[in-house]
Length: 171
Image 1 (cartoon, rainbow, N blue to C red):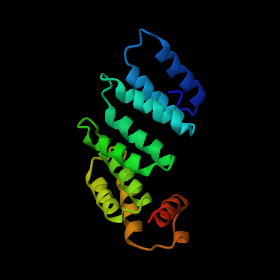
Image 2: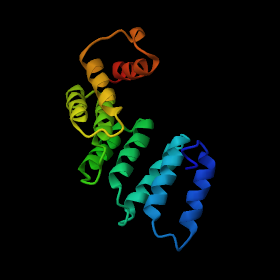
Image 3: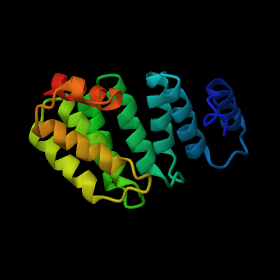
């Protein structure tokens, strides 16, 4: 809740306190939440460590989310090949119920490393996958359109322009 309110430092303290408590029985969840708070602050190296610790916990049952967020943190650092592996792991988790997110993220990582064909396939898979948030199909459609065309960047909204600029630099 603290992280959702933008109180990242307080959230980080709370998750670390929980992890210091020997009676705390869901460390994977705390490590995952710590990673999210650190990622939100832009502390990607520390977030990566936290996500990996979450994945070490055999009782942690939302592994796909941790793999996806690990991919995001790696991508933010420019480690796109490692991010691709993480997104693939997220998609391999049968309990991961928001695959459109990971497919769209995977597609963007492929764009970043210049793999247009794989990016196109991943964008298409994103559009066919479950999207409970409702935004990832739109993100995948836009990504696919930008990949296949040369729309003038200045004709797009600022958010769309940011994605188009990534497409132009990554391909």
